[in-house]
Image (cartoon, rainbow over all chains, first blue to last red; front, side, top):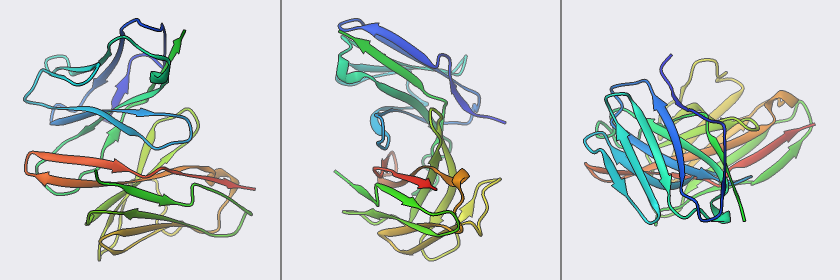
Length: 116
Length: 118
């Protein structure tokens, strides 16, 4: 079936490095993507989103890139800090403008470990 | 910002008993809420879509008689795990979306409920 998935289950970086977390999706009809951060024992925390009519969106220390040609999504974290250590999920929605409530479909997740 | 509150955060119950989990949208009305289940080191799997005033829509493979969902008001959805068994032990998370405008919708998540069935 169609799903959103991540390339690597784990990523280890040094503090101060830039991190890149990747995600591949298979549903070409998806029109909205979100990156979430989840710390142990907590619910997902919104990081950044991007719509399918965009290629790039920047936030504070984070950038999301969308390549619709190869159905690829990435999250770039600049100057990674120990507090960034968590599991990162990409999620997709199709039909974001169709109705008030739409379920997110999550990818498998990447565990980011930041060492000092 | 909008907040979704989930209660309890942790619950331990005996096998065969039922457990109710509440999900509240604190400062907005949510006509639709979503329930997810997350096993250790795995992703969030959508269980069901809870619609205010109507029956919930369950994903394939989710037993509706075991996971009872009630969305009696615009700010409250409940998930009841009936006749719980150890394999139901999991992290349950609710979500509600808020549509600010036609081009601006955001999803908010509860804190999650860690259910342990012994």
